[in-house]
Image 1 (spheres, rainbow over the protein chains, first blue to last red):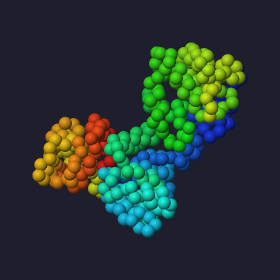
Image 2: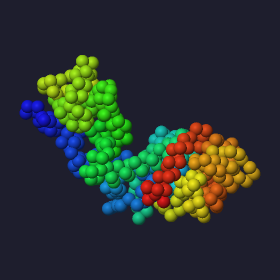
Image 3: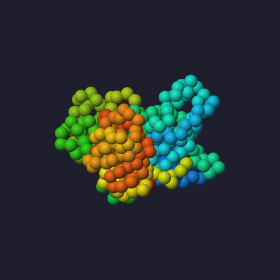
Image 4: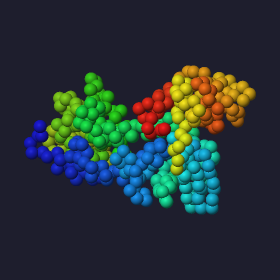
Amino acid sequence: MYGGDFDGNAAFAGGGFMPSQATTQAHESSSSLKNRDVRTLLPLTLKQLSSASTTGESNFSIDGVDIKTVVIVGRISRMENRITQVDFVVDDGTGWVDCVRWCHARQETEEMEAVKLGMYVRLHGHLKIFQGKRSVNVFSVRPVTDFNEIVHHFTECMYVHMYNTKLRGGSITQDTATPRPQMPYSTMPTPAKPYQTGPSNQFPNQFNDSMHGVKQTVLNYLNQPMHIVSEAGVHCDIIARELRIPLLQVKEALEQLSNDGCIYSTLDETCFKSTANA
Amino acid sequence: MDTSSPAAFVNGALLRRYIGQKVRAVIQVIRSDVGSVIGKSTDDQQIVVKGSPQPPLTTYLEVIGIAETDNTIRAEVWTNFGDSFDVQNYNELCKLANGEFRHLFI
């Protein structure tokens, strides 16, 4: 279905910081995942954190994903202010963990002053192990003010767990049965997470009868950073295949978007690029 | 770190599974008596929470404590959850945390 001798894979291979087209459309290769996993921000329950497997002092993994930075939401059940750091214990109902927040700059001290014993907080930190004891080296603590955030956090923990165990490493059948909330739909400029909640919401659009939905979907697709940095744009066959929208509809949407000034054709009348700036 | 005494997310129906164990529930306060608070669980059942929280209480209240009977919790920790809280979401979380995703919680 490729037009002429246009090689989509070659065209996208040099696409800057995003994985190449070849790796995103296939089941993503482990090397590209590895690269992104290094920077993951992983929401976990403390039960999950305590069951994470470890190979050394700071190499943890869970559900096949390396743990780098964790997100925990829980209640501060003990707290001790020291000269250079605050030691505290966070309990999220599934367990508790010792935490250290080093306070050097004034901003760090002020951040910790807002946090009191008994408060619910959301924290970001690194999981450490020392003499067999796990603790978290915290670099951000924020009091929870809307308590729906607690529900949201645990829901996210379940979602990410399911994503990492079922969707990503899942079989072909699972893959085709459920829309893949994966890379191809990324609208985020920095895809640091191995999963993305936003994109999946856009999938309902794909079989929408109204042309508007298809147009928006196609535009979102072309607005992905990797397509914006690509010189050659994206071939309409690839758009149709990636979005699972019939080619005729894609072509119609492309024509309308082109008339609207949202996109323009590049190599020929079959390859398109968004007019948005990267 | 320790995960030996988790507090299970419960609604009214799930409370009876944890009698004698630690639970956490969000209730909508109906009235406050001496030594107890009467409230509505996220699945609309009446729950008695024993203990004396520090007033003032907001509409929604999280209690962590021991499940004594199928409608009583002896509270150890009270947290005001404010006046706008989505109980349906919490109720669904209770079900998932005791069902398909139980192993992530307890």
